[in-house]
Image 1 (tube, rainbow, N blue to C red):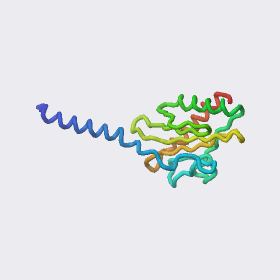
Image 2: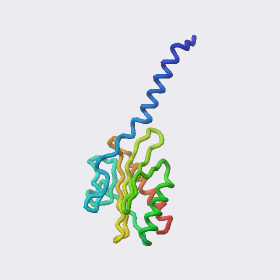
Image 3: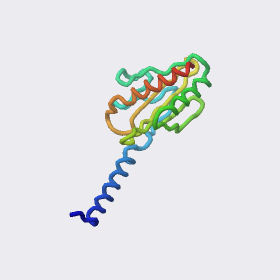
Image 4: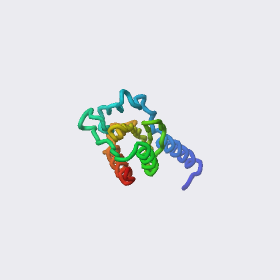
Length: 155
């Protein structure tokens, strides 16, 4: 027999649990974001990060490259980021971009940084999960997908 008084608290508890689950996985932005002495920071000792500076082989990923001018490459990268699902550009300044990418189901947030080196026509990259240990290769796959979008612009 169905009892509406017993069902209502269960539904409320489930709703609260879902709200916590969907909002509790984002974490806070790390204090280590940004460029120091022309470099993005190294990855932590976890497999949920990639970086294009030559800190260690486990986390290394190639930087983006371009052949055209810096302004076109900068705007092309902005367009490429916006094309990707669940992306949000947080910071844009003369040679640096910080974007957040949020996973669909668990709402995990990854911080992705880009630092332009116009002299070498490269964009240094760092993509790191805010929480957890492993990302099952998501950060590396995201940068590879972004690289494909960026190359399609023929910059």
